Image 1 (tube, helix red, strand yellow):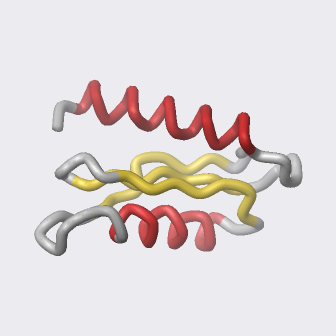
Image 2: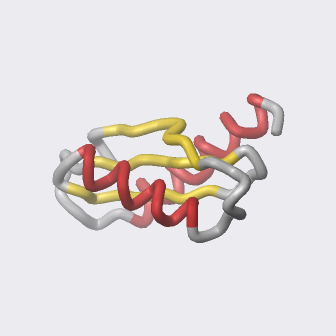
Image 3: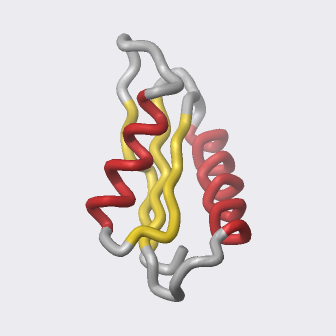
Length: 78
């Protein structure tokens, strides 16, 4: 998957997560993307570790075992 597409996907998903968020002001959110294009995201987590794990788990649930999910972005203000 081209880097430009991944970047655009990351922006779109993170923007959606920010708009949908009703949590606290300084909560963590992350985006994970696989080589085959599957993705997962998280928002309104108290810790970066929790947000990272949720995004990776969600991505893994939508991808094959041959593909690996990686965190592409984490932000404390989502």
